[in-house]
Image 1 (spheres, helix red, strand yellow):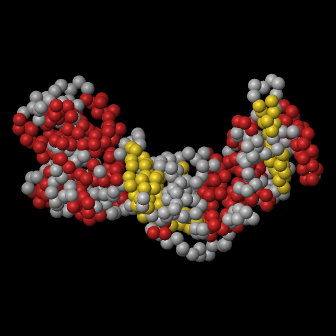
Image 2 (cartoon, rainbow, N blue to C red):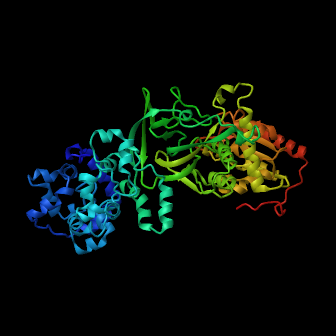
Image 3 (tube, one colour):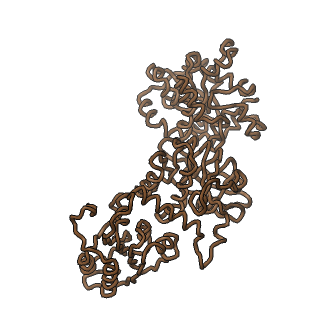
Length: 608
């Protein structure tokens, strides 16, 4: 193995690494740099640091050092700020000083300290190079009195020596033949390029190795095994990244035809099954995946993919046989194990019909309860409450930011068993029976967990709309007609998820607006009378999956709304013809033979 020539290092990559490093150590470095005078340089010091000074790398972030016509090593050793910089990809001055504050306190130059005394003391020059461990593994290096990092750069990498538990030199070269063919130092390549290209530093399951070290009492090495991830990627920001991947399908990386053993037909468990994926990257907010070097444009609720499939992720583009994908990278995005429950849930209706059936299938599989649920960071409190409820609060929820990549060692991915679900739909049955059955199962499990036995049903409820335009319907005459008939007027978004479900389950008559607000009626009990105020836009709620389920359990009537200009109003307002609405309400009340509601009834839940 030859040492990576300085000219082979990308200056653009050098600048990128320094920008990333600035997120981590910039503030600390600025505070420590102030007031340091320039240090006169002795000629022998220039030769002393040469083994760990990469001129091309350093000039990538300090072009002014070359303009002066001086040796850039003079700039590095004399400039008071440069001591916090990175003279070599494997030596980070700011990180070294942060790890060893005694060096900073003494005012010693970090690289000089490491070469003179730090290596012998077991000080690490970089998060991925453990000098003390390296010398323990190769005592001949210590016996020869050679600096461990210098030995690794000159000979160790060529001999297949690992620089730390977190990086396997021989495996990295075997897994990345392009690096071996170019004669590049594998660790340098990984730090400069590989980590940002999604390449892995070791074949080991890092989480398992971490637990082994931690349990053995070797906490320092246990932390260092994973610690490097926090230093090579920014802590407080996202690095935009673009990469090209082969197009792939889930059928190419897992068995999609596994039978549903012991699971009743028509349930969420039979509708979905879990696919275990190794070395999978999840992109927050999407169902599409990166598995190894393949981008898989999966579209929920089906598991389709292939040449004709379009990804549900808007930052992916088809380019011939490949995909160009743009995403963000951050620190703390490594998740050893997880269950994929993100994507396809932009509305609450999508959340109910797509995501919660997947969760029910997950719960039936008896997976380790320590495996977390990977959910969207933009899921509201209502959605998170539903997830906690159906998972019986036994699983941790890890929120994933949209567009950010999260690396996993093992990902459990729920997919549709019927990959041709869209082809089975028709005008007579717009939703397959298994989808309807799955949503019914969601409804039943939520109601059972929240309400237990069926509550006494005599409440009358008007659910105020969330859309501003529909809210313009609220006027004194409209509210008066409702209050005269003992209707409660509720802003359902102000209530907790459990109270929302309990309130709707205890109501015998519900007035709701079409659109997203209609989704709330999924919690109504059989026999409920529902009056839907149609929107001016005319959303087709009848043919939604929620509409199909609610229509089977409730008596639904509709009333149109119109735009009306009032004398005291600057613009048009949405209005309902009260002469048409009130007879409908009176008919519902009479048909149900409801008693007059009383505020002090024990079954009446107080609303704030």
